[in-house]
Length: 121
Image (cartoon, rainbow, N blue to C red; front, side, top):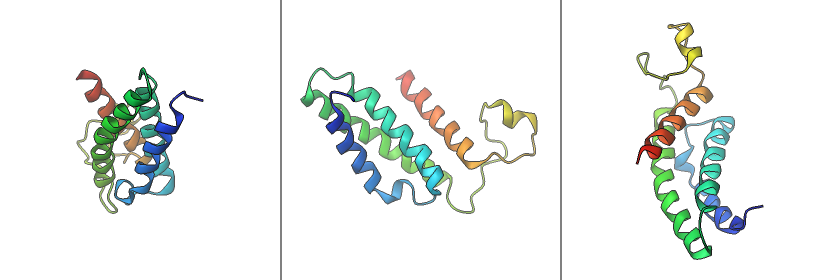
């Protein structure tokens, strides 16, 4: 149990209430995305020195997570297949060039790309 659990829970509820962030995903796919977002929030909020700073951190991360979740959801819109030339940097996709990646693996790859981009800043 984190010392700022209520702050994280409140922020997570705001993400869960926003259907636009997962409208094109199955429940399992949405769980992958939402679980990552909540873990990301917990990690950032836990570094706060007090509850006010935790609320500010949660607000800032919600501002970063919403567009990322929306983008991933949009890229996986129903009927939209991953680009054949998309670089996923995952060994399982390089083994069989004609194989179509499963959507949960694609979501994890897109998440990893976001984390990497955010870590560089």
